[in-house]
Image 1 (cartoon, rainbow, N blue to C red):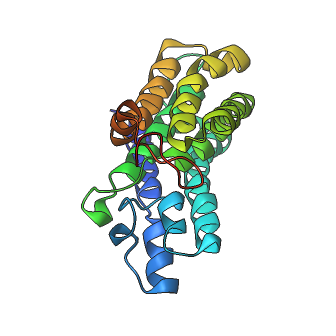
Image 2: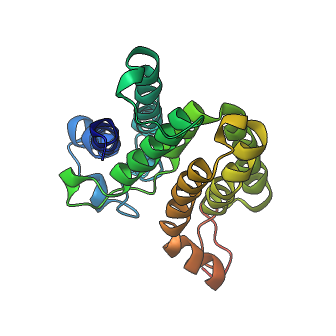
Length: 218
Protein backbone atom coordinates (compact mmCIF):
# COMPACT_ATOMS: atom_id res chain seq x y z
CA UNK A 1 0.00 0.00 0.00
CA UNK A 2 1.26 3.46 -0.88
CA UNK A 3 2.85 5.10 2.16
CA UNK A 4 0.80 8.28 1.56
CA UNK A 5 -2.41 6.32 2.09
CA UNK A 6 -1.03 4.98 5.36
CA UNK A 7 -0.15 8.52 6.45
CA UNK A 8 -3.64 9.75 5.61
CA UNK A 9 -5.31 6.87 7.45
CA UNK A 10 -3.06 7.21 10.50
CA UNK A 11 -3.21 11.00 10.84
CA UNK A 12 -6.96 11.11 10.21
CA UNK A 13 -7.61 8.48 12.85
CA UNK A 14 -5.40 10.26 15.40
CA UNK A 15 -7.07 13.61 14.70
CA UNK A 16 -10.50 12.07 15.04
CA UNK A 17 -9.56 10.30 18.25
CA UNK A 18 -8.78 13.52 20.17
CA UNK A 19 -11.56 13.40 22.84
CA UNK A 20 -12.27 17.12 23.12
CA UNK A 21 -15.47 16.64 25.11
CA UNK A 22 -13.71 14.47 27.67
CA UNK A 23 -10.70 16.81 27.91
CA UNK A 24 -12.70 20.03 28.24
CA UNK A 25 -14.98 18.69 30.97
CA UNK A 26 -12.04 17.15 32.82
CA UNK A 27 -9.97 20.35 32.69
CA UNK A 28 -12.66 22.97 33.34
CA UNK A 29 -15.17 21.04 35.46
CA UNK A 30 -13.03 18.37 37.07
CA UNK A 31 -15.55 15.75 35.97
CA UNK A 32 -15.57 12.68 33.75
CA UNK A 33 -18.18 13.33 31.04
CA UNK A 34 -18.55 9.57 30.62
CA UNK A 35 -20.18 9.43 34.05
CA UNK A 36 -22.92 11.87 33.06
CA UNK A 37 -26.10 11.29 31.08
CA UNK A 38 -25.57 8.87 28.23
CA UNK A 39 -21.86 8.44 28.95
CA UNK A 40 -21.05 9.87 25.52
CA UNK A 41 -18.13 12.24 24.92
CA UNK A 42 -19.98 14.40 22.40
CA UNK A 43 -21.38 17.92 22.72
CA UNK A 44 -24.89 16.83 23.69
CA UNK A 45 -23.66 14.93 26.71
CA UNK A 46 -21.17 17.65 27.59
CA UNK A 47 -24.17 19.98 27.89
CA UNK A 48 -25.64 17.61 30.47
CA UNK A 49 -22.71 18.42 32.78
CA UNK A 50 -24.16 21.91 33.13
CA UNK A 51 -21.88 23.86 30.80
CA UNK A 52 -23.36 25.02 27.52
CA UNK A 53 -20.13 26.86 26.74
CA UNK A 54 -18.10 23.67 26.91
CA UNK A 55 -20.75 21.92 24.80
CA UNK A 56 -20.42 24.56 22.07
CA UNK A 57 -16.63 24.33 22.24
CA UNK A 58 -16.83 20.54 21.96
CA UNK A 59 -19.13 20.80 18.94
CA UNK A 60 -16.80 23.22 17.16
CA UNK A 61 -13.61 21.31 17.96
CA UNK A 62 -15.08 17.94 17.03
CA UNK A 63 -16.18 19.38 13.67
CA UNK A 64 -12.80 21.06 13.21
CA UNK A 65 -10.82 17.85 13.59
CA UNK A 66 -12.89 16.24 10.83
CA UNK A 67 -12.34 19.23 8.58
CA UNK A 68 -8.58 19.28 9.25
CA UNK A 69 -8.29 15.59 8.36
CA UNK A 70 -9.84 16.25 4.95
CA UNK A 71 -7.99 19.55 4.46
CA UNK A 72 -4.72 17.67 5.00
CA UNK A 73 -5.44 15.58 1.90
CA UNK A 74 -6.11 18.64 -0.26
CA UNK A 75 -2.93 20.22 1.10
CA UNK A 76 -0.96 17.14 0.05
CA UNK A 77 -2.58 17.24 -3.38
CA UNK A 78 -1.65 20.90 -3.84
CA UNK A 79 1.90 20.76 -2.51
CA UNK A 80 3.01 17.12 -2.87
CA UNK A 81 1.06 15.67 -5.84
CA UNK A 82 3.80 13.17 -6.64
CA UNK A 83 3.26 11.49 -3.26
CA UNK A 84 -0.34 10.55 -4.03
CA UNK A 85 -1.25 7.19 -5.60
CA UNK A 86 -2.66 7.18 -9.10
CA UNK A 87 -6.30 6.20 -8.67
CA UNK A 88 -7.74 8.09 -11.61
CA UNK A 89 -9.45 11.46 -12.02
CA UNK A 90 -11.08 11.29 -8.61
CA UNK A 91 -7.90 10.46 -6.68
CA UNK A 92 -7.98 13.42 -4.33
CA UNK A 93 -11.65 12.97 -3.47
CA UNK A 94 -11.18 9.25 -2.88
CA UNK A 95 -8.44 10.06 -0.38
CA UNK A 96 -10.46 12.89 1.14
CA UNK A 97 -13.38 10.49 1.68
CA UNK A 98 -10.94 7.99 3.18
CA UNK A 99 -9.67 10.68 5.56
CA UNK A 100 -13.24 11.56 6.53
CA UNK A 101 -14.04 7.92 7.27
CA UNK A 102 -11.03 7.41 9.51
CA UNK A 103 -11.52 10.71 11.34
CA UNK A 104 -15.05 9.57 12.14
CA UNK A 105 -13.78 6.13 13.18
CA UNK A 106 -11.22 7.84 15.40
CA UNK A 107 -13.94 9.82 17.17
CA UNK A 108 -16.09 6.73 17.63
CA UNK A 109 -13.25 4.47 18.76
CA UNK A 110 -10.51 6.66 20.30
CA UNK A 111 -7.42 4.76 21.36
CA UNK A 112 -7.02 7.13 24.33
CA UNK A 113 -10.36 6.10 25.87
CA UNK A 114 -10.18 2.35 25.29
CA UNK A 115 -12.01 2.73 21.96
CA UNK A 116 -15.19 4.08 23.60
CA UNK A 117 -16.05 7.37 21.96
CA UNK A 118 -18.93 9.33 20.50
CA UNK A 119 -21.35 9.01 17.63
CA UNK A 120 -19.36 11.01 15.10
CA UNK A 121 -22.02 13.50 14.03
CA UNK A 122 -20.05 16.72 14.59
CA UNK A 123 -16.85 15.18 13.23
CA UNK A 124 -18.68 14.05 10.10
CA UNK A 125 -20.11 17.53 9.57
CA UNK A 126 -16.61 19.00 9.57
CA UNK A 127 -15.18 16.27 7.36
CA UNK A 128 -18.07 16.38 4.90
CA UNK A 129 -17.81 20.19 4.72
CA UNK A 130 -14.33 19.69 3.32
CA UNK A 131 -15.66 17.37 0.62
CA UNK A 132 -19.07 18.67 -0.44
CA UNK A 133 -20.19 21.80 1.45
CA UNK A 134 -23.46 22.26 -0.46
CA UNK A 135 -24.45 18.67 0.33
CA UNK A 136 -23.79 19.41 4.01
CA UNK A 137 -26.23 22.32 3.77
CA UNK A 138 -28.85 19.90 2.43
CA UNK A 139 -28.16 17.54 5.34
CA UNK A 140 -28.38 20.39 7.85
CA UNK A 141 -31.69 21.48 6.33
CA UNK A 142 -33.02 17.93 6.73
CA UNK A 143 -31.76 17.88 10.32
CA UNK A 144 -33.45 21.18 11.20
CA UNK A 145 -36.75 20.22 9.57
CA UNK A 146 -36.88 16.77 11.21
CA UNK A 147 -35.99 18.12 14.66
CA UNK A 148 -38.47 20.99 14.30
CA UNK A 149 -41.26 18.56 13.38
CA UNK A 150 -40.45 15.69 15.76
CA UNK A 151 -38.10 17.16 18.41
CA UNK A 152 -35.94 14.05 18.00
CA UNK A 153 -32.29 15.10 17.63
CA UNK A 154 -31.25 11.48 17.08
CA UNK A 155 -33.71 11.00 14.22
CA UNK A 156 -32.62 14.27 12.63
CA UNK A 157 -28.96 13.23 12.90
CA UNK A 158 -29.57 9.84 11.29
CA UNK A 159 -31.64 11.18 8.42
CA UNK A 160 -29.10 13.96 7.82
CA UNK A 161 -26.35 11.34 7.63
CA UNK A 162 -28.44 9.21 5.27
CA UNK A 163 -29.14 12.06 2.86
CA UNK A 164 -25.54 13.22 2.54
CA UNK A 165 -24.21 10.55 0.10
CA UNK A 166 -26.88 11.11 -2.58
CA UNK A 167 -26.72 14.87 -2.02
CA UNK A 168 -22.94 14.84 -2.52
CA UNK A 169 -23.29 12.76 -5.69
CA UNK A 170 -25.85 15.22 -7.03
CA UNK A 171 -24.16 18.47 -6.03
CA UNK A 172 -20.41 17.67 -6.24
CA UNK A 173 -19.34 16.07 -9.56
CA UNK A 174 -15.92 15.15 -8.11
CA UNK A 175 -17.61 12.68 -5.76
CA UNK A 176 -19.26 10.75 -8.60
CA UNK A 177 -17.11 7.64 -8.45
CA UNK A 178 -17.81 4.26 -6.92
CA UNK A 179 -14.90 4.57 -4.48
CA UNK A 180 -15.94 7.97 -3.14
CA UNK A 181 -19.58 6.95 -2.90
CA UNK A 182 -18.65 3.76 -1.06
CA UNK A 183 -16.46 5.57 1.48
CA UNK A 184 -18.99 8.34 2.11
CA UNK A 185 -21.80 5.82 2.46
CA UNK A 186 -19.72 3.78 4.89
CA UNK A 187 -19.22 6.89 7.02
CA UNK A 188 -22.94 7.63 7.04
CA UNK A 189 -23.83 4.03 7.89
CA UNK A 190 -21.38 4.07 10.81
CA UNK A 191 -23.08 7.16 12.21
CA UNK A 192 -26.50 5.52 11.91
CA UNK A 193 -25.25 2.30 13.51
CA UNK A 194 -23.82 4.27 16.43
CA UNK A 195 -27.38 5.45 17.07
CA UNK A 196 -28.66 1.90 17.52
CA UNK A 197 -29.73 2.56 21.13
CA UNK A 198 -31.65 5.62 19.94
CA UNK A 199 -33.29 3.52 17.25
CA UNK A 200 -34.45 1.03 19.87
CA UNK A 201 -35.90 3.82 21.99
CA UNK A 202 -37.60 5.37 18.97
CA UNK A 203 -39.22 2.04 18.14
CA UNK A 204 -40.21 1.53 21.79
CA UNK A 205 -41.63 5.05 21.98
CA UNK A 206 -39.46 6.33 24.82
CA UNK A 207 -36.73 8.27 23.05
CA UNK A 208 -35.91 11.64 24.62
CA UNK A 209 -37.29 14.63 22.76
CA UNK A 210 -35.57 17.99 22.52
CA UNK A 211 -36.62 19.79 25.65
CA UNK A 212 -36.74 16.66 27.83
CA UNK A 213 -40.03 15.04 26.87
CA UNK A 214 -40.60 11.44 25.78
CA UNK A 215 -42.99 9.78 23.38
CA UNK A 216 -44.30 7.13 25.64
CA UNK A 217 -45.58 6.96 29.15
CA UNK A 218 -42.24 8.24 30.48
